[in-house]
Image 1 (cartoon, one colour):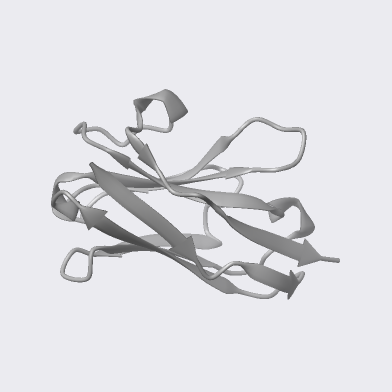
Image 2 (cartoon, rainbow, N blue to C red):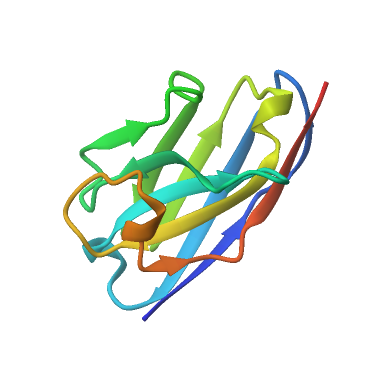
Length: 124
């Protein structure tokens, strides 16, 4: 079992930045691929970014590429999402998730554990 707790969400103006954190506890954090997803009202949960166990490989949704950066600190059992140049369409609840597999999956169903989410609101 892995417990995930997100933090760092809030209200920001368009063009601003936020840094989300996801703290993990339970089983060894470093064995999991970690992903960030988001869900806006009335929409399905969508992939944002993913980082491999070692942190050496990452993948991003086209909509955030060049603006968001995913990173992890295995010593602190934490994964981060640095979000720059935020847009109103980035408004959503952001979730971190853990995948025990080996790939860089963007598929929600591949992830075994989820946090409770943190709200990000970008005003225009």
